[in-house]
Length: 385
Image (cartoon, rainbow, N blue to C red; front, side, top):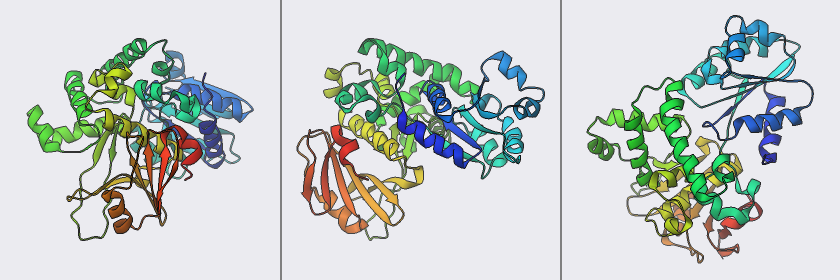
């Protein structure tokens, strides 16, 4: 078991502030293991119900309020998306005074899950989106392996790269054939597999629904639905553009990324560092990998992260907006980063506090006024945000 200390500390803090906390993420990302670590840190009595176990599911079928109302301490409910109607019961129990229990619910992010809980638990629930294993958890000296295999614990812990990729291919198949249908999504698996694979080849680019629709021979709305399905299941990120009040024409469509680099490589048929370094998507893969690492490390919400691009070619890979402070991030697969015209344009047009260039070298150093170069291998120590 890999200790996930930062996640545990944050979740314990959220449990003190909210009666219900939801850990959301794709299956096998480590939600159940993390919940076990949280339970150890919580202290006191802990109860766990797994809605994939028929016995636990049956217990909560007839009178969930009676069953859950008798429990004290921390109550963990796994695979809660199987019974979204439980949120109405959790609202009643969360409002009891004195409060007798707190609830940690785990599940895949789905439109039904989010809608049901937002209707029933407004102001009572905090969502915590869990990503893959971070460099701070596994060691920055293992950066190359983490980039290649991704952050799913089973892929990371596999005895070899081929074994890791065998697991990733199985994950993709299971996700399409079992996980999505369990969320109530009725789209043929082969169609979504083809779409997901095409999306892997599009990774890191500005979204173009018309081009995808032509390739599939379907309407733009159908393609948009496919994209939203994979985004809602937390396997794809739509990074929204930042719009500044400037004269230049700016890009208005989102960029799309596969959230896990291992899944990206499995869909692209990349199974070794040699093939990754020589692949045309190597740079885009590196960008997406570190983008997710930075967002997860800083616990940034979707509304705080954007990209910026103009039709004249100026761009930023990531723009972080925290209150009145704006920070630009450029991610480069190079050991010799430099201040580019795009960086100068972004500093001037967006009133940025600074620009950080994350690079593949081993040292961090200043590149110029308001511009720093930060080694990807030293993110925890040198990012400083």
